[in-house]
Length: 239
Image (cartoon, rainbow, N blue to C red; front, side):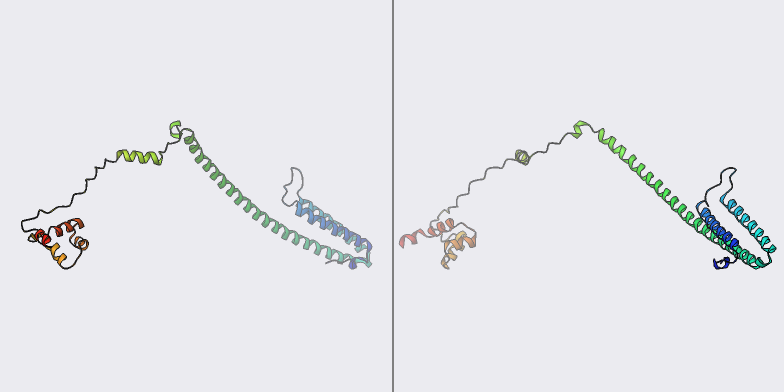
């Protein structure tokens, strides 16, 4: 790489190389900013302008080399400057190619992202349109509902429902009055010889009270007491 120390010997070459370096830097900036811009009709592209600038610089380099050949003392310095400038141009070309490749890769990735975004936007539009078409029939059905159907439905109260059920319920027959206790007809010898009342007499002889006898035999207490009272009227009168 050329340095400022190498350009100190011939002052005219130093100024020329500095101008060339500035021009090359401007050339790289122009290539980066206008690499994707298409040239208009009758207008040279950025690459053509860069090639023309390089050719112009090479022509100036050749003219400077020829002037240096006319001056034997400055021949080596001019050759050294020419080689350094050619090396600088080569490095600038490689740098421009690398930058161009990187920018193209980034542009391709950005284009892929834009394509994916367009696809998702299209799918979202389809979904929105489908949902809108589904809502329209529902709105039409709601507007076509008749007033009779939209009127509130009268719900019967619990009291009216209970009254209706009571009207439909069959009338309950009146309860029959309780049957009076069966009063046994005493025989000539009393109830002692009646086999129907033998269990009552046996339990009474065993010492059971009338309530327990009624519970054991399933009879009423009044019936048991009546049977015991009519057991043997002759014995009861004697006693």
